[in-house]
Length: 326
View (cartoon, rainbow, N blue to C red):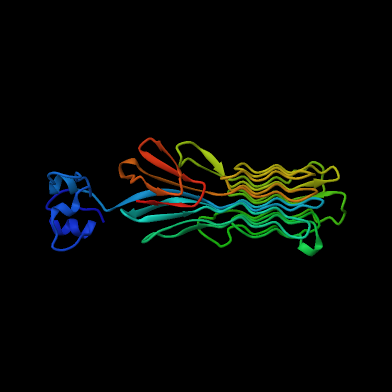
C-alpha cells in the first residue's frame, strides 16, 4: 500500500512500506521512493504517495504447434496468448521463460506441441501460456486428431471429429481457440485438413469443396511495444485434389502447401502450416515482453532481451529465457 500523500509520515511508516532493519535510520532509504541516492532526505517531500511496488505490463506468448503431413495435413495451433498488469515489489526477480516452437511431423510420428512460456517471481501470480497443439497427420497409426494446447491443432481430412481443444489448461480470459475439424472424407484424392486455432479465432474447418480455404485462426494484437503487433496465429490446413491450401492466420501462422507447409513465424507463436507430402512444418517460438515505467526501470536483466523505450515506458523483449529484477 502506498504511503499517504498528505499529513504526517513517520520513519516507522516508511519502514513498513520499504522494509529495513531496526533500529531504523533515514540513511537506509536512499534511492527509495523519491529520495536521492545521497545527501539530505526530506520525509514528506521524498516519500509522500510513494510505494515499494510498481505496475508492470506483460505479454506472454507460447510456442506454436507443429503441423501434420501426408495427403492433407492439418495446421498447428498457435501458442497461448496472455496479457495483463501486475504490481511487483522493488527487488523482485521476474523469471521469463520462452517456449520453443513444436517440431514438424515425420513419417512415423505426430508433430510436437509448442513449449510453454511464463513469467514468475516471489509475491507474483505466475502466468503461464500453454504451447499450441500439433496439427493432425493423415496416418491411421497416428490418430488423425489435432493436439490440445493454448490453441488447438486442426484435424485431418479423414476424420470428421473436432479439432484439438484450445485454452488447455483453462484460464480466464481465454488464451486461445480450437483447431478446425477435418473434411471427413475417406477419399485420398480430395479434401483438406483443418486450420489450427488462433488467439482470437477458431481454425477454419477442412472440407472437400474447391472454394473452401482451411485457414488458420487469426491471432490477437498487442501494443505493448508502442506499436500494434499481432501474435499467435494458427497454421493453415493443406488441401488435395483441387481443394486449395489454407493460409496461416494473422499473427505468424504458417501457410499450408501440397508440398511442405511454411513454419510458424519465430517469436510470434504461430502454428506451422499443414503439408501435403514430405514432413510437416515447425511452429514458431514464443516471446515474453515486459513494459515498465522508465522512472522505475532498474536496468538489471539476464538473457539479453532487446530493450527499447516508448513514451514513458521501457520495454524488454525476451526471445529467449532470462530475467528482470524490478
